[in-house]
Length: 318
Image (spheres, rainbow, N blue to C red):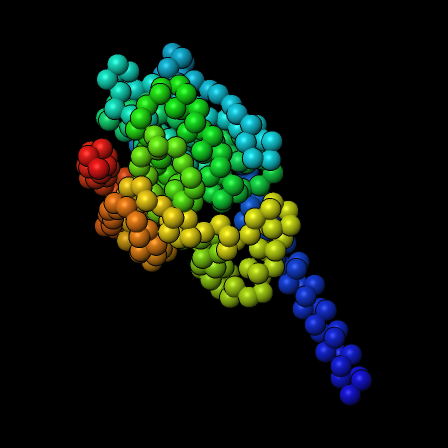
């Protein structure tokens, strides 16, 4: 009996050690991807042009002319964070301000198609940040939207100080959409009037659970549990805490939910989970037919613009 118990104890210790090491590996794999930041700028420039041909030349010309300007602030963890901003194409008749939030392993350049849409088509001022560990911003690891939401709130404050608008929309894609939804449940200033989320995940736990199954054919236990504990110890948050649906339950401001029905990275089922979680205030849903992950605009550019335009017009009447 004593020998049997000793064997069980050895197996238990071995299981715990293996689980911890696997969780540590997953945490590094998911939250510290390489290359990143400045080393990854050229890839993202090419990606931006693939989503909207010519958009990099448009941006570069406006940046060289001093219309797009760079700025920084100190974010969570005392990291120096970067953003670009620009006034509306017709500043005297600006319709509001848009804060555009990029996705996982991207930066302010990738979703320039949205920046151009807001600035040139809708005549909005634009603020476009690089999140932790992305673009020109500092940071030890990806924050998956949870701590990023606090930084985006600071960028929104800066944008309001620049333009003093009483109508601001926060529009995010993928991890940026999760950031947007997570932000929506916080206590926010009155000028933040609307949100647009495009293919965001229901929670970091749900997203990593899907990724484990899709990429490695593994169940969440024990690796995901261990990785979440490692994340809590290292970065001060865990995968279940970082929840869009929990934050959406506290959101009472208008939100447009967008998701491609061919998305196999952030599962299409997350759209309904997110939509149902928002029980207060106005909301709309648009399913982008045939669109894969973060591809709704590229697949349906005119319909995308019209859906957002109509949503914003409706929001202004509420």
